[in-house]
Image 1 (cartoon, rainbow, N blue to C red):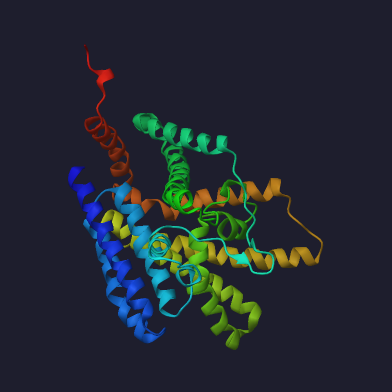
Image 2 (cartoon, rainbow, N blue to C red):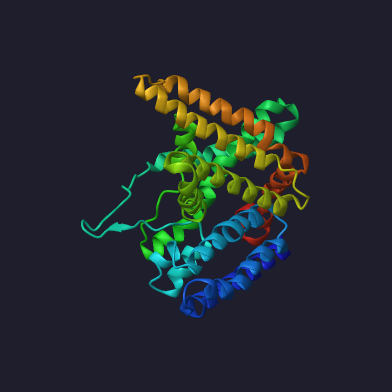
Length: 349
């Protein structure tokens, strides 16, 4: 653990130094090909840095922040687009936005109010999620006595709770020290009523916001010339899901260090196709005055997510022991903290 933390610190020192170069040098170069050319070495470095980390809980978030979010934000910066152009008042803000899973709320210049309303989550809900995550981790001690399907359900809940809490903890210092108003990262995905609602408005909105300007909007503009605006939207949705699948495949490689099997890509392509079909069916139903009640649609969506997740999303991780590795790290982390903190109360007088 000592060596891993040392490597983790070195990775992030290198990241901060690289982003200083982007801010002070690359950003001063005219937008377009020349600026992209100046940023390419940093993009290559971001692909290499997470390979220095072997742990799930340090390497996983670092891979997501740098290989996916950071890379895409710098690509947008090359053409004077994205969050790094909209909000970069100083170097500290620039580094925070480039390396962390945050998007600042944009203000309407006429009303001087944020374009996205602030939704305050009750504090008890956050505490409940922390408690549930702790209970899930504790339940892994008895996994040999649990049914495999129940364990998979625990993994689904663990993935959601862990992702939401990690992203929230990553954004908390920026919100506290700088007073930033940050766009919500999750919006209670278990309340979704459709696949479109789940992927577009509730699940990991940080990814949704970075895929829109980098994939969805460009593909939609180009496709409109050939297939018209209606079909172009469907093509853009499919492209966004495909890129999301490929990026998950890349993250899986960093976690397991084995060649891809493309199962997680199939998962996202399947959900992209189903989302496009769902939107088309809803249009027909609305024209005829039909609407599926949320008491029916919500369980159907959650069941579809669970079944396809067990079929295509998790097997690649389970097959390579990533789940067992993550569980072992919890015990190592607890022992590490105990060894570093003075705990006189535990010593006999």
